[in-house]
Image (cartoon, rainbow, N blue to C red; front, side):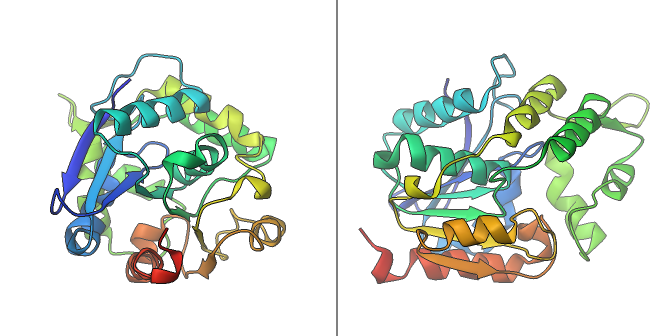
Length: 259
């Protein structure tokens, strides 16, 4: 299935394809694309299945998401672009490296969900099962425990496109909650093994948040090209915007990693 696509920058520039996290959309990359990455790249981001303007129909397995991604870059005529994946998008990018390494030039995985325990996966699935609508956008932002110390107005602006306002003034996120619940069930399995990483890869994570564990870093550090630690929490494009944007640029513009 071809996903809904949004682009920034010169259409003749080298392509950089971005994969958002659970509950997000292409708008997750709006600021960083407009302010930073579109200076160098044709930045392409899409809404995953069950999100935003893409189809919400099942199945919602991780393998289906990867197939959708391949279908979409095929439709765009892209062979092996550069990639950025954030959170669940980072996990899907690791799976892409494992299953379709020929479709990846270089990969920047940001705060990836490599593997989590059943308790966390179950808790997050339950949150999505019972969530989806809030009294206001501010009420939603109050539930976001993974952002760190950020400007609430700037954060609200970056998330405004994810929601629609209902007749009673409440807001609903533009996601299929059933699809989101399914996503968390597979996160207890490993996204990829270290030996699957055969393309230049940046691993960027926030140690303070703890999603990428010391054991996971130790396993992947010998096979990735670069490891970068950033301050703040899980939402690195919000809580560590400059550090994250610069790390991705430095990696992708480094001739040592050109192939």
